[in-house]
Image 1 (tube, rainbow, N blue to C red):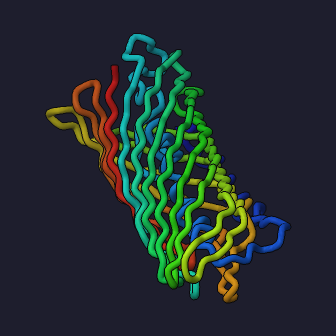
Image 2: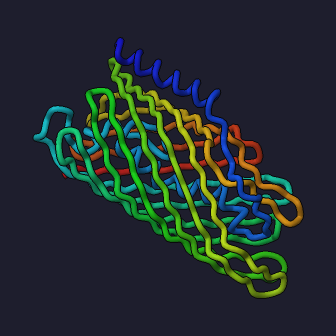
Image 3: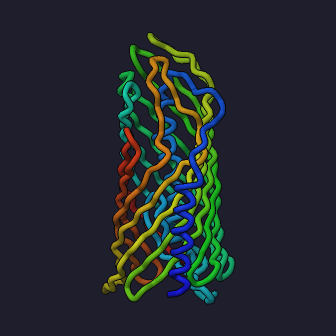
Length: 345
């Protein structure tokens, strides 16, 4: 328990440092001035879309709260207990989720849905080290109300990942990925256009996990970085625009915790849980400004709260159900649901 208290103290100290010592830094470049639907949506829905696959991977590997879901430990997720190399070595897992986003910035408001599916496979090379590869698909459907238009996107991603168990309590996981996106836009009066995007993302998390009788507790300190470039394009139809290349990025420090209570069942166990994660934007692009003067400005601080249940069926199947909501960012809200199934071999 002394180690657990020290770990919690370290994470709390890190949280204090983040709040007082790491203000968000925007680009020195001039603000982007555009009426492009894809550029306006990019900072909100685009970042949410990018974070889903990284969050799915992190939650498969650890007890963290990134994005959608939770898992007990990196070793347990692959069927390998710390110090025991005789368990199953491979895990195939699948995550499916949906997120509702709602941005109410005056003169730049939009809402819509993001659907995602992630398939991954990993192998425990040693008692401590796990390597894996995940692929994902995202379907973006947004109504850009400010210009009576729509934005539709299809995004394919690939992401290798790893997890390393430091000791019985601490583990580290990381992923880096690349995405290919196709976007179609419409808006007043009858303008239509299409563009392609390329996205890089990466995430790293340090996780501390403790079991106190039937309680399952974890704390996570992590960092997420997303960068996306959308190609220049020319629309057609009445009201058509010529849109310049758009480059956007966001770096975010995340501090989270999760508490669950394990309940034995006839088929294994279930663990209802609650989670919370503070999010600090520390490196991001300058604001998007429409030619009308409306500004799309993202707050530097936000939080994600979650509730769900994870469980085990027999010795080789795990499952997870979760609902999340984002809070504390003015003019922006997001709600998500997800389900994950893991099969050990």
